[in-house]
Image (tube, rainbow, N blue to C red; front, top):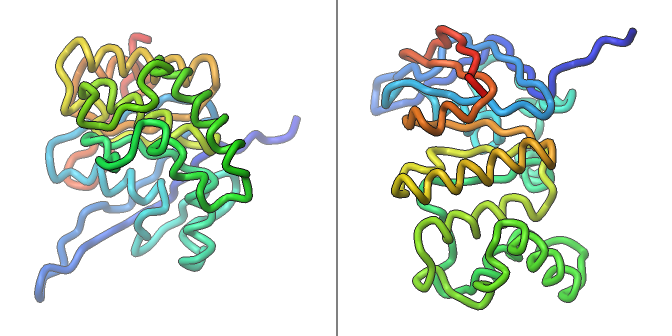
Amino acid sequence: MPLIMPLIEIRNLSKAYRRGDQTVPVLAGISLDVEAGEFIGLMGPSGSGKSTLLNLIAGIDKPDAGVLRVGGIDITQLPEAALADWRAANVGFIFQFYNLMPVLTALENVELPLLLTPLSRHERRERAEFFLGLVGLADRMTHTPAELSGGQQQRVAIARAMITDPTILVADEPTGDLDRVSGGEILDLMDRLNRELKKTIVMVTHDPKAAERAHRLRHLEKGVLTDEIESPV
């Protein structure tokens, strides 16, 4: 039988940042595989390198050394323009603070990633309406972020992340700014996207309740991946 490669393949990945004359190591020789359709959680104390690793997987930043393949493509070798194109086509972002445009409606916020595509205005609107319906906001399309609750804003952000049909959803503390009930609803939605639409999700979280939703947990300590825990899910 042919060998099935992991969707995300990380080998000996290292990253450091400069602070004045100092070099501050953040990740030290990380290796990790993530299978297609997996929901993986990354946990660890502040400063352990979780968000840095997430940004590298998403192609937002580049490592100093190592290999990071997604779908067989080593994205560390892509020039900036090609990396931007790859990121737009393959990665959906879910942020802790939503990152919505305050002057735009929910529909317009979701439509934003499609503005640089060849889709017509009608096609963009139709797709944005579909994904807002998918996240349960069909009746809030004309509302601006200020007119929505935190949980509703995060649903808009998830619809925006999904609209390009990305290969990977990366979520950085997706429930960190939400109360327990709203956070649970967002986790239910992410679970549905993973289970029903087979989306691969890489999530950074401090929240044990959020971590329980992942299929697998990895812990980062001072830039090193430590134990691996199978989730009860």
